[in-house]
Length: 78
Image (cartoon, rainbow, N blue to C red; front, side, top):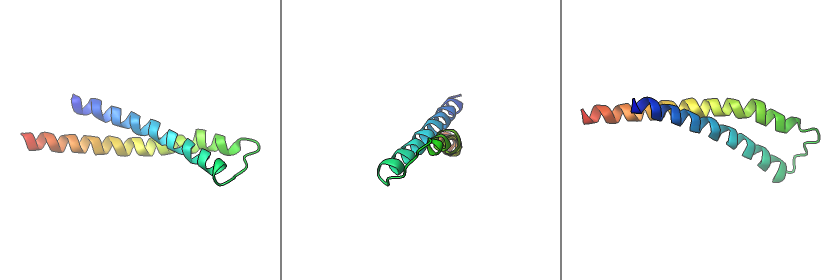
């Protein structure tokens, strides 16, 4: 049961982390590199398209890595 709980938590952490990472990329792009976003289309693209996609990819990756590691540790103890 602990494996399922930690896998779900890892997925949620990856989901939130991916979205935050995409928004940080937007802020860096507009602040540091001077990209001008007049109508906010770039921000909406990052917030509603790139962010959820990156979050989904990172969430699945974190969940798989967590489940594999915990299963490997359980087999080593047995």
